[in-house]
Image (cartoon, rainbow, N blue to C red; front, top):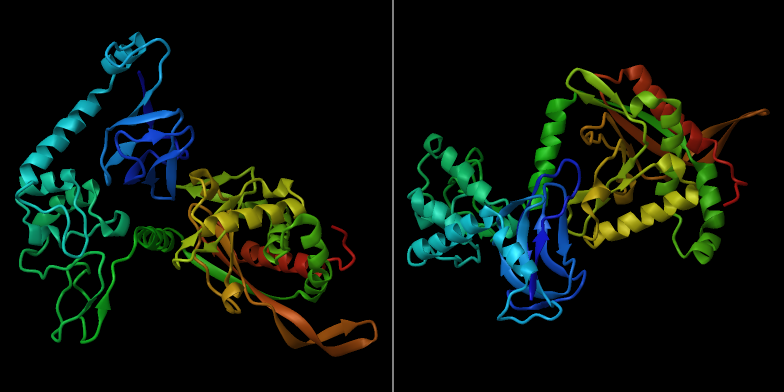
Length: 447
């Protein structure tokens, strides 16, 4: 038998580590080629790690909730070797064993110590179902953190689990916080009713008083990341928003005319989103200074036009898959990308690199019946556009015979931009140009 290391994969230029959130295979179980072995999470997306070989999971080198660096071995998989037996290791096996990283031995020793130290001191699970890994319990034991205090530590792991980073951050700030031992024990992943008297809940900042009948729910991991990203954006960029109302009657007429034939031909729906993206791409080519990023006091002018499209998940959270090089795609290509990314976003099948590298973002608030919004910039981009609901409204139509009153399909475009580098003139002209492309849509266009 030979052993192959399962390596933590590279998941994008800015991703250096990932957290193990769930092992899908146990030691001794058979693994097929490309079969998922475990689930991991980064600060951008959850993903699965497939096996590069067929074999048996010989050893897990890390536990759930452990943070692993990219490129580090996370498991050992035994594979069949030719002309070898289990009692006589091959040269390849010996080589792998001899060159196993020192980190593996350290982690194994630490986990063993943790299990022995906390086996009778701290329970693995609470009544509410909150799980504590051996490493977390070991750190708590060494730092003199009792069970009731451990229950008050905010967790950023899956289902509110406390990770290594969480417990270390808590220890580092422990001296600056009020004593937590007297706080009520609250399961992190549960929902509870507030008592009659206002109290400071251990999972809140303590700045908001509770009232009778209130309930407290922990944010899930993705919501915490979104919250941090949004706060960071408004603290980084001075936001300005410009609005334009566009007459998209031609565009609506054309889509209604072709959508059935398009579905029969391509097997896909023609939604409005690809049409909006096409107009935005054209406008970016006219105003390339919208397609930039800010790095300190330097401006990075992006060569590629990569359009992020905000997608709502069934959980209510938001994710932004990216259409790479959108300027090199025709409308059919953009439509295919939009449908594919949106479908896989809803089923949590996006790859980490598919939500990275955006240079401009669109969010369709009209999907929820909203007529306009003030979107927050998706850093490190400098602008984002919200497209509102399309509504029939009476409008004045200018003709060669004079002004007429008619029923038109109207919508608002909201353009938020970073006022450090995008002034009102550029921000306003850009959204106006997008509206122009939508209003001038050719009703006789072939597809």
